[in-house]
Length: 202
Ligand SMILES: [Zn+2]
Ligand SMILES: [Zn+2]
Picture (tube, rainbow, N blue to C red):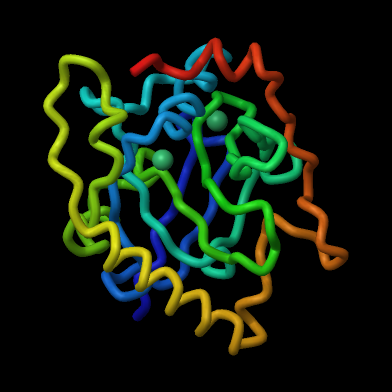
C-alpha cells in the first residue's frame, strides 16, 4: 500500500494528505536562505510558533503539488504571502500561522516545498536521507550550520521531475491553482518595510 501521511497545521484545523511519500517521490532538504527565515519570522510575528532550527534553517520535503490533497480547512484557513511581487508564493494556515508550502509563482512549475514541521516523525523517516543543505552563509549569526551540500544533484532531480510532470496530464493538477491559472487565494504581497522588518541581517 502506498504510504500517504497526513500534513497538519499546528492547531489541526488545516489538514492534507500527501500521496505516496518515498525517497524517490521527493527530496528532503534544509534551507537557511534569508527568504525562508523571513517567512518563518513573519509567521511568528502573526502569532505562529517558531519553526526554525537553531541555525535558522527550515527542513523541507520537496515534492510535486498533485500529490497533495487538502482534507480539512482549505477554504477557511489556507492563505499565502509573497515577500516581494515576484517572490515565491508561501502558503500558511491562518488559524495558527503554521507554514504549509512554498512554490514558484507559475502554474507550470508544480514543485512545492513543505516544511516538515507539519509531518509526524514517522513520515519524515520515510523520506530518505537529507539530500541537501543550502545557504549556510545566511544561517543565524553564531550558529554552526552544516556546510552546503547536495545543491546541484537536488536541482537536477527537480528539473527531471518537472519534465516528467509536464509529460503527464494528471500532474497538471495542483490544489493551489484554479483551472483558469489563478492562485485559489491572492497572496498578500509584503511591502518593502514589512519585508525588511522580518529579514535577518547578515
Ligand atoms: Zn492551524
Ligand atoms: Zn530558502
